[in-house]
Image 1 (cartoon, rainbow, N blue to C red):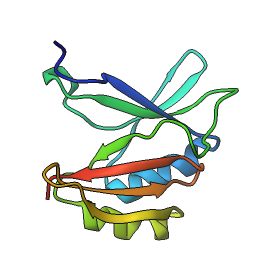
Image 2: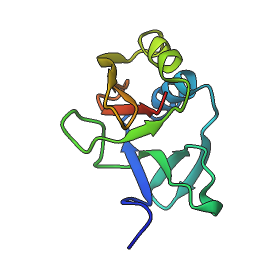
Image 3: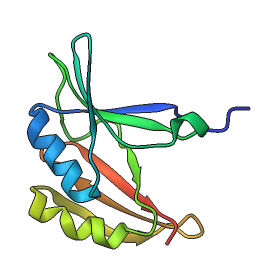
Length: 124
């Protein structure tokens, strides 16, 4: 059996710089910029070498953010309330504030500057 249900995620964006600024602002961390073929990527930090799951925002022709697609939950362990508080000022919208999913911690749902609906998760 596999340890993780996923091994990578991509959040498609229409405006790379706007999306990068949004995620860097709410998470208070830099995204590592990279280009692979037609994909311009901003990779979220993770400990991928030790089994961590990575992901990126991606600008690619024919793809863009839109509500109702796949929902990704970003790990914001111990920082859920702080991240939620930064979303409106960064240009996003809160769809669901902190909500208990006991015994599995807490989540929140937000919309980014590209129209993607994503989640945040923290055990505390």
